[in-house]
Length: 313
Image 1 (cartoon, rainbow, N blue to C red):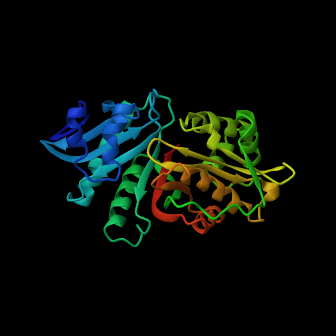
Image 2 (image 1 turned 90 degrees about the horizontal axis):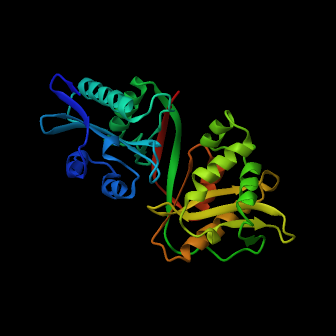
Image 3 (image 1 turned 45 degrees about the horizontal axis):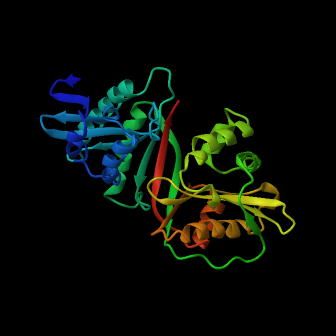
């Protein structure tokens, strides 16, 4: 697509990765591997070029082999352009690429952007974040949630306190039951949004099938926390997401909240991953989920960056 001297198009293939990655961003080093694994396709990686100069780009990601993109996780504009011009180019690219990438009638993928933890106080980062926010808003997007991205070194946490016992889930149904039971009162924005459209059991089953069950790491890592008499208190899902070892899911059942059990459950999940001799452990939670964020900090996880999510109706 050519608009005057501006060309909007997908890259032709791997031979144009050097063009697509010309604008700096944290995910650049992963894109070649994502193409190899089927998480990305050349047709999902769009550029706005003038001659041989890259002015903007947009890229989508999905799970390996998926038919449709899941997240718009790359969106960048040449910051040397005048602001009005760069916003205009960003909007034109995003509209053209979305129309080509997303099937008619499909829900538009969420927008995700990794930003510095202090981006609001960072004079270099804040204008970039706000420009991209404006581009997404111009196409109808709206803020959804800001998330903390956390990391811990590989050292094992303190030994178990003995207050809880841990075992593997007895099967998918037990884990889905527990995931259903923790949804009342959840502070997680994604889960709260899902609950506006589906009953809790369906939300839990979809989360299990679309994410938890897809991890290729051993299910023997997963833990259900119980009282000494066997009553479940909570659970944790340590895993590897293809990029990093992660705490994929962590929760305490409503009847047992407020007693500090979250610290024991998180320590167990951290211990499972530390025993795999991993270089680091990653986790994330909503900025507004202050109890969960506090638990991660007590367990030695530090904030390394944030993630901004925006959605389209």
